[in-house]
Length: 246
Image 1 (cartoon, rainbow, N blue to C red):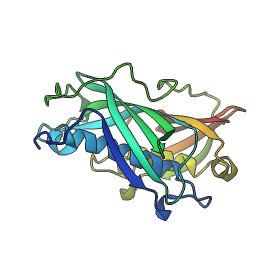
Image 2: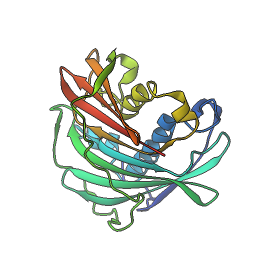
Image 3: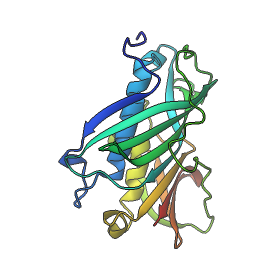
Image 4: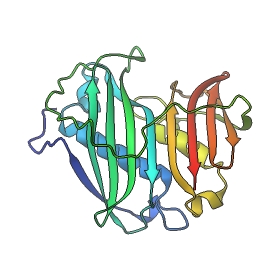
């Protein structure tokens, strides 16, 4: 698709939080938060001519590699939120994108994401084919206080759940969607931690893709300040989630 006439290097998109997106507390689910962030990133890419549809002409897609989310507060049912996004860096096969969420002009959430270009036929990373020089980059404008990092997976982790990947776990790139990993792990967290909003930030690392009917094991390691989940296939790490607690 051509570059949109409305394209801008900083995009703001509005959403209204509906009841299907909320926890019993009336707050937005963490998985739904990530969906809203991803939808905003996808729309910005589409407006700039580097969307999934554009990239599929060259068998390419953006895949998420790392993500950090810092939370001051979660929006509530019926809140009108604004998600703002811009790109910190974009070169070769990698991009760092920043996102923020606001309610009534007050920033409540900041997010930094790291994306890689992925060939959907060879299932390997490669250089971005499409032109992208029209995106103005903002390397100094950060959405989070800390950047994403490599999560330390303790070898003393405990196996707590096994799962088989099913069709509803997959996305348009034909692998497990990034929000599904978060959902699997959040389902295993003490409900009081979630309902009382004790998660001040979380990070996700995506290491190996998972496909239909893959057999995986979810592991957990708990400390006073954080909970680390990891997901393995055949004893190899595929994903890690670190919940940093207040």
